[in-house]
Length: 219
Ligand code: ADP
Ligand code: ADP
Image (tube, rainbow, N blue to C red):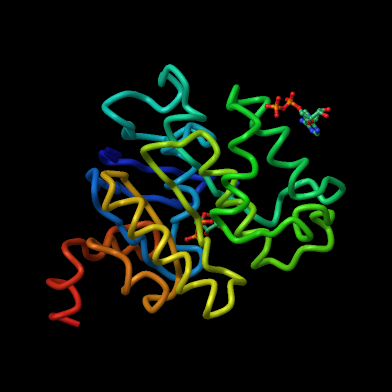
């Protein structure tokens, strides 16, 4: 469960996020939709405590993300797949994360399998990865701790159509097992097939939210 209440963020005179409220319930995929610069990343970063809000609150399972007993295992994050260390192999990247998170090393191969990064790919350095491969690795990293919540910022960026189709199945399955997913995109077609609910943001404000069927019927 993710709850965002009247969240705002100002940078100097610029309001990046303006009075945003929504909730994401277990068993659902929420598509967070809006053009580049709308405030999606800033909102997601505030939910995870990486960016302090100017006003408002965000909680995961009813508490501040940073107060979760074990945030890394409770919430799987994919915030910037482009920012992974270029000099490590995919497998080393996950091994290190598993170590930091206190997750058994066997999860590394399980998660690599789950995202379809084979042994050959896992031995290559991240600098040689396409953006789509980085997204797969980022998703594997997010899944390492067997979290109940996934927060994914533009995970479909750089994925090919087959990759988007595959990820859709993975996220649907995750939610159908009771997980909570918040998934951002600037493209409706990337979220419409998998999302149950949509939160549409423009220039920092929520312009529409509701069930996908409800919203798309009116579109
Ligand atoms: P989105 O993820 O929807 O593309 P962002 O949350 O990245 O949007 O950005 C929202 C707005 O906030 C943009 O105008 C962006 O330029 C601004 N912004 C984001 N981060 C910063 C920052 N660290 N300093 C100043 N402005 C920022
Ligand atoms: P297991 O859970 O399989 O027992 P270990 O943590 O004992 O895994 O490590 C198994 C192998 O992986 C060892 O050879 C170790 O050097 C290597 N290893 C462990 N942690 C890391 C890491 N963060 N990065 C790269 N290699 C690692």
